[in-house]
Length: 203
Image (cartoon, rainbow, N blue to C red):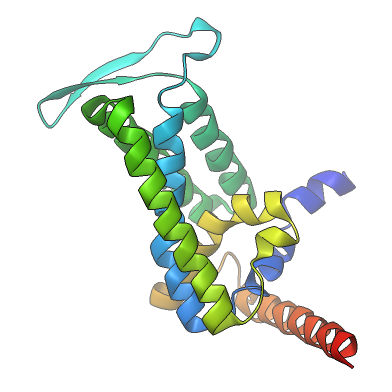
């Protein structure tokens, strides 16, 4: 039970990620680059074979035939979608919908580009987006990315974090009343703790 609660503790996850993303410019950079990283990760996984020989789904999109293959691209999107819904039913459902759109869109793009061109597109997007985020941390946040301390948590939470940030910034959304204030207190405490440790190392 304790493991389950810890796994789906949105306050804890958000505070951890937020402590590494408190600078507005760095947050904006992540809002711009995180979902393209997610999308292109699915895009390259669209070229993997079907899982357990499951049938694919055929349909037409913009006059082109698209085959939705239930492969690792689908599994990747599904795991993220389910996890986000478990974290918060409202924002998580929106995030799950975006995961689904990314899977369908990447499947369509994979069919249009073919592997020989798709992997080049993925490489360029990934390099640009990751470079942008490291610049955001180095020049604006002045703190190493969260993935250096907790790779799995940082990679899984990143798309949901920027979505919640956008929902809170533009629509004042909170998973529940007082969430933002509680998390902000935890973020400030973690930042202060990091600054103290950094100061101790310098001195």
